[in-house]
Image 1 (tube, rainbow, N blue to C red):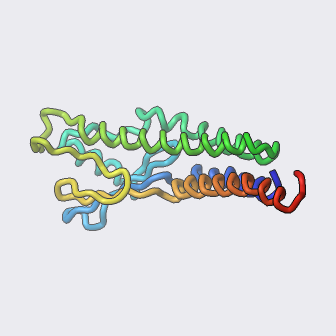
Image 2 (cartoon, rainbow, N blue to C red):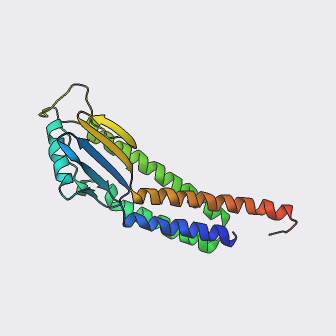
Image 3 (cartoon, one colour):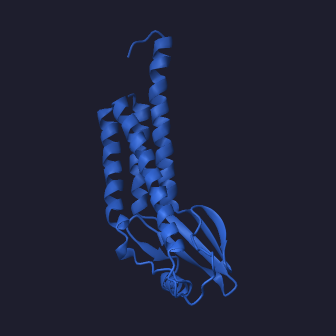
Amino acid sequence: MKPGPRLTVATAALLLGLVYLFPLWQIALKAPQYPEGLGLRIWVNRITGAAPQDLASINSLNHYIGMKRIEPDDIPELRFMPWIVLGLITSGLLVALLSRRGLLKAWVALMVLVALVGLADFWKWGYDYGHKLAPDAIISIPGMTYQPPLIGSKQLLNFSATSWPGPGGWAIIGALLLGVVALRISLLAPRAESASGVIE
């Protein structure tokens, strides 16, 4: 690979480091009794409230509708996700160092796979919390489920739930796009050289 794709893939790998500093995803809840709103921040290794007491408040509300408590220590993904990201960063820098187009293709494919698996796992997490309700809940509405949206907004009783990527999530999206750009430049380079009569 030429310097352009190598620098681009190195930048993409380093961009992934932002997931250790910022949340991957954020869920906001608004209702008349909570005009200031409640929120969750999902990080690479923990779950917190948007404000210090938000997680405790959300768990209290969940108790009334039969949802289980959100206990970050009980979520195994939060223990191994930091290592997955570290592997992507390290392998991306290695691709830039070794400068092999085949390795770049594999790295971009791995990035796509990790992103898709992560989204599917997040959807399943929300499905389990929103559908597996205690039968003896204080508030029980037949047929009602409380799965938050994967992305976008959704009405859950008197709460409006909104879910969007956090800064860490946008960093992953940016890194993936940069990886695709690096691969595109790398694939186009031989054609341009062949057309000019220059052999790589």
